[in-house]
Image 1 (cartoon, one colour):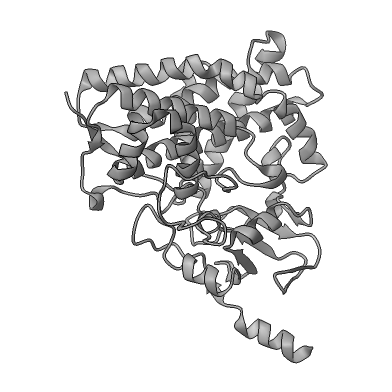
Image 2 (spheres, helix red, strand yellow):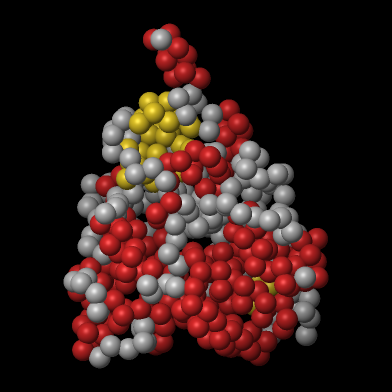
Length: 407
């Protein structure tokens, strides 16, 4: 038995830092595929020296994300690459930061949010999403090509919607967007990060006071009727704001870039816009934007895939690798908008699956529908080598995307 365990340890690859090098912006880091085939659970040595684990298969990713023996708390969060600032793993989860909590604490928040992020409520927002998308295109067409699609279209839609959902005045969106970008930029210094958090917390806390005095028809006003304290409501608001701005904007822009660089698939979509819902699921799978997590910490000793994970060890789940697992998806590296893409992990899995996924889907579907109806001949206005990618950001995507169209 001892000899067998020793052989297993020797066979387990040991990776120093999460592989990040990509030969193509539309595919995960090159090393992840071979690693998944060799050992879907591998030793990962974090930059701070912690000996953790890396999960690269779809089955193991689902298993870890659904197992309550693995914690999502902030104390277990370690960055897998070198960065300018270090988010301390010793920092406790702040009140209201529900995305960094475990059940039963997390369940309390999730239940309250479920009543706010209903499919019905998201459907009621669709006319407003359409209005914002058309307004963005009006301005793009007024100015004329070329245009940076990220700043002109992909960012304004989710930023406007999350601010309206929270009841944040329109004139404050730009300030929120700037602070959000600071928080997800890997090059941000500790001081700048602290200032961004302080600004957001101060603003939301004052907004909560205003909502209690004069509630409106928005999410924060609805939550003031719950048993959440002002401190907890502030944490909820900041969490939703940062998550709602960054991820959807990146997905809208990266998804368009992928479509324009895969003309055969763009032709499939334009030939059958009724299949847009399914196409979005395939885009979310194929272009997985969460490329450095999620993280989980073992609350006790766990045996996973024949390996002994000790209490306190951190497990990083690679969603891009899991979403390209050939054991789950046929020919997974090929974008196929006709594929019935079910079971992907683009919105996570388990109790922490993205609570805003219905809104994100609506923004993607309406944004692309309006875009392709009104901008014929839409195309990338720069060679691929000039499109800068977000290697140094927490969410994968483009830093800008110049586009042009027929006028």
